[in-house]
Image: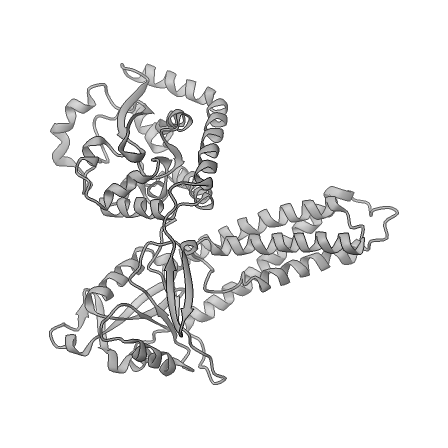
Length: 493
């Protein structure tokens, strides 16, 4: 789960004479309406499944409860709960985990409220009916939101007016940084169409910053946004843009239909670690320190060992079949043990199925000039050292299954940074070394974001983001996305 630069909505108000929304805003509203229809369909199906599973085709005999009214009432109450918990807020739709969290919270609160109300009022609604309906409904809502988000991401990545047009305001260095960050994840829905820079920089700077047109200075930000059709003004750091000027900019944008967002210099910090505290009218952003120990770490370790032990038991026939195929395909051992560096800089032997010829390390020097990645790793798309069965194993990441033993032994975690080689660690600088604060993982953000197709810089950025912002919920999300990455074979070579 990667993070774009934090975009914090500034305080603006709407007026009755607000102009017609742009194409992106219109499509956002249509997307919200489609979500309402989708949620209604899912909840209707869930309630019907709960009814049929509990009572079958016949009406419950001897019951005074009118389920013909209870069922649609439950659907309506569920939709109201989703609305109250702001599950249709366009600020959380399509990006981040907050959308899924709100949907789950709304469902659980409704279930708890109904349980308490039923106990107090002594209403005999079938607990089996409610339990099945809520179980199916919660799962169905999350799956439906995931499918809808993927469709939205495809539309935003392909353009077609699904992204908001953004005017970036700030000094040149911060403008370029924000532009790079937003373009790194186009599915977030922000398309940069222009920039405004300080007056003093207009003369020496050409009419473009990279490929971003410079459309004005700080003196005419609203006019520049209107001229290029922007529906969002993103303000980043600049010494000339004081708090007073930023407040006045918010006033100038009132009634224009243009949103104002502020991108602080703080990056790669997940939402749960950020809290806004208004002090004397100033919104102070409080950032909690990363958590590297405590109860959550103990739970993570327990889950790692429990899942790895079960997985090894269930996958034993597959592991045996792979071992036999490797033995038949080429001479040499079935398993490959390589020294890697784990938490705290401690070295351990990582286990993998052998996918290369036995003298692969000796041939590396001759292939060094054909390295296809930057940074400290060696990657080659058509590596001649890889065996026939090895290419198949790498394509589906089956060669990494023996690492479940490392997880069981406590050397690794199911989710974490990529386990580095000692030669890589020897060249780490101070920032990169923070990867060693947590256990390396069998999978991680690097796995679900492109694997070998990632640059060294992007791989390190994702690993450091995980180290700073890990959570059990994020681990589950990464594990879920890993299946998709493996099936699609993205960056596997």
